[in-house]
Image (tube, rainbow, N blue to C red; front, side, top):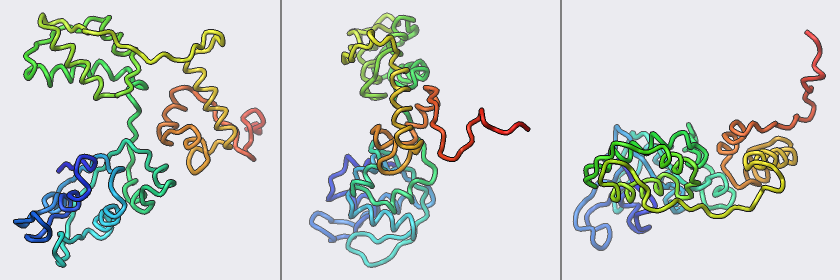
Length: 267
């Protein structure tokens, strides 16, 4: 069962999640089961949960903790057993610090977190995504794409993708419409937002990012999580920072009191 918390009006989302009784409000001409009730014994996917209003966050927390809820207009407590999967583009740790997201709900949801890096940080995934979009769209667009030239695939992998996978899908659909001969062609060049020149320094972008991350980590004593620490100062999720540390080969600062490798005692 899927629910997009950002696409529903605030006045309707409570009814969508928990249901309502007949006559509970204007327009409620019949009883309606909510998504949690329908998903009983299964799974509910809450997309864009970071956009959920604070009052509804409290009611969602009750469902997660107590496995119970009431329909709007009813005093009857209903039991439910549902596995919840949630997704958001919002940095929930920052939202908690800003008072926009309940800390208790965040910790209740944060059982098994999965952070998906932006598309620009995983160009090796682009070929598989390209062929997946082609396979899913070929019937509706009436295009049988057989070949993706190396030059086209290279252009797709080198682009920054500020709109992530949604932008990739749009670009590919437009390209498929303009490719009636089975060979994928980009109808327009992919334009990057001009970046600040780095030729004078002789450093690559990865090197500059690595140096900046190392500097911030040194200033934070190697601490990634928490207010005022590295992830917050860099404006990214802690798991994203860990991914970049691994990808860029960032050298972590020595913790105070730790024995440097060179000073370790011989075995």
